[in-house]
Length: 452
Length: 112
Image (cartoon, one colour):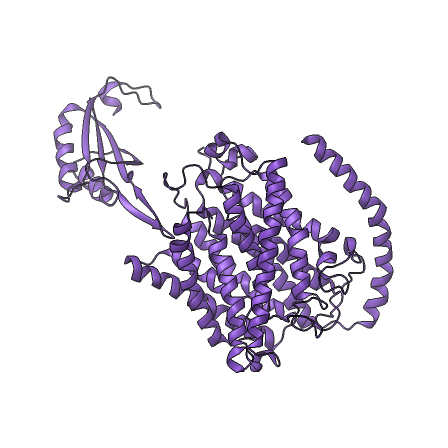
């Protein structure tokens, strides 16, 4: 194993030396040329840099605490390490080839290699979606999405996945599944891109209902099934070990989501304000709906239910924040809160798969509800053009369904193939002894809680 | 010398401490423990997954006393920790061979 890593590192360094240095030299000239002609709008730049930082905060500490509190205490570092390591690894991949594969070129289905090693990516204020997307701010903002999306999947295989396999899976998943879907939906030439006049099925996906949540949620379901249940699932108690962490994490996700959704306006404008408020309303309605459903069904509302409801509402409004008003946001959040509650309790228990932290139940189901409902509620007052079913455009529902099916299909089929290959080569799970010992000790030689 | 080990409810700790100090008994060691007797556990639900938690949180209080103080202490604990419902806890009394104060090296009853 060590030899493979060493050989990989040498090959990587060689590629970097051969291609990276000339690229840097090229860029030095381009920056000077371009900064002379582009006027920088300081308001937009300030908001987009803030949003990028907020989205990074969603992965860690947000998701790391949210997921960390839900596992047993022997696995908390295992989960947190997955989040933090992905912050590093996915950023490296994004810079080397991810951005280029997602946003390069004019093919409707795939990116290209024009921007390898961020070639041609320069600091500029050109942020509007219709204009060039070559701005460095757009690159880093989108890079933060590239980090959190595979991190969401970690909830499905928590407490049992081998760390090395998780790394390889996430890297390949990012390049082979995330980048194409991001290209379809958000690259100017994508076949599902809302503002691409030549798009086959222009779908509304403002901040990543399909690209982030359906892709990761559906892949998570495949992971949960192929990796298999945790040892003792259904027999031993596996309660969350620290719901205070989970609550803090959920609150950080809520705040970070303002960057995720309002930042997806790519400017500090009215679009961003509407997305911000709609996002907040959806989260709020999600809390009330999920905790309320528990209250009715079992007599008591729970803090975990309230937190899960907030995240479900946020997931659901993600594709819609740029197309619906805040009151629609309330409706979406409410439906997602109820829908995800049933997905995580009734549906999961019925089929018996071990989606340990409900990555599919919240992100797959919530994302699908949102991507469908934006086709219902999209209003001309917000979009300024494309409308949904209620305003007389039933065809938009077709586009939404196609975008959902396409991203779900690539997520499911792609993950299935990747996991089958990894199962045969590296193995997906830690050994039974290692699983009983916990991932903290078996994967990292560390403990989350030490008695001194 | 005797050791009194009392397993009591969490929220009764302050009452028990006050009752003991009122009787002039000072010095005790307290730890958080888990266990079950006749009370058995309760159910917890997390996103629809239901678990029966058998081991309930309790407080264990340890005091070492000279023989003559033992009945007073037992009475104080029994009165202050009692609610009359299942789960009030138990008191265990056992003999102690020796007590040494680390600072001075004193031994026996004087060291308590």
